[in-house]
Length: 370
Image (cartoon, rainbow, N blue to C red):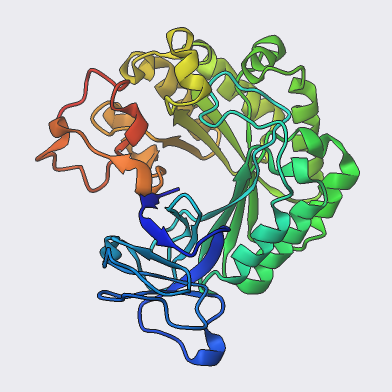
């Protein structure tokens, strides 16, 4: 999530609020954070104010010395006592998500966000957060950690999204293990959300290798979870993070997916984000994406020839062979999507997915403008 560091006054606890640039009447201010140039103090009634002025005064919460051009009417942010402004929802973004929990029952060797062991229940905060979303939002993700670690509260979050953003498609990132419990899979279906998709990772057609990658003996629970989700008509996608331990068997994995999960709506092959556990294990995981093109092309052709949709996420068009460039999706969140000097002048830069900001150190040696 995008963050800005600022100076604060009268902020002792984290403040959650919806950005307004135009102001609200006195009776409708309590959930809003006023952002205006030239403010010295926060007008009464607002949750807080944000301004470009450094010399802030008054008794109400205010953050100063901030580039107010970063904010848009309808954004939702938090301001904490350390002076960090965090964007939890951006009105102009197509990749807004609710972070359900930092806990996880896997410890994937390439996870960009290692799980936490203990945390406060985030559901009450998330219910409030969702209530501040724009009602015309087109898509909301639910992510973590592992979202199913919050149990049935996951369904409360889904219902809250349906209530406040009725037009939104909902996507859930989950390892699928909890859905091996048929009753839990049924409860998801009973949320009656027709435009919901759950994306589940399968990293190998070999159980032992998948389990090694996720750090848990759960391959067959994930498989059972996929079947239970399909049983109740839930839309399913499969995700495959490609690295040194997974690339060799991509064609075999594609064949395995077709024969065992022909009901999935998409199979996404994802370039690795090199932070967190991935950075810790980089020498065991890193391979230049150019060097697994042969296996990637073969896997995609296996799926496409059999009528399954295949996509490539987080990849650069100049690295991909031309015959699969049409599968590339711009999937990196706007706030962490960057391009390199080598990309300047490329005629495909508008269509290209770019790079994770964290991947400046580890990226293909074959980057060049087209």
